[in-house]
Image: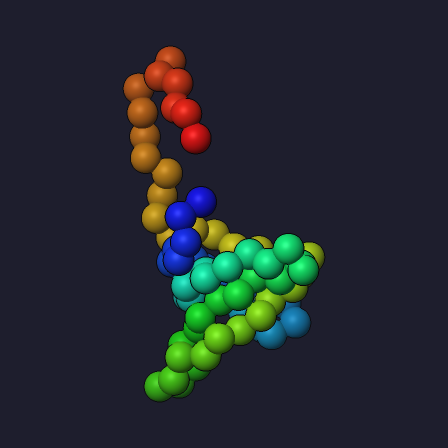
Length: 71
């Protein structure tokens, strides 16, 4: 996974439903470090992995059937 990455965030605790942000880091301590815009300011937010869903805004590239991709 290439970071930073543009993502959409879903977190019920903060009322985020498709909020846009930039994923900076996935911490081994159990949280995502994300930059989000609130109003006119950009804030660094720590979101618990257990309660947060992220969707990468950049779709996966499509390949021909049968082509193996090494990750």
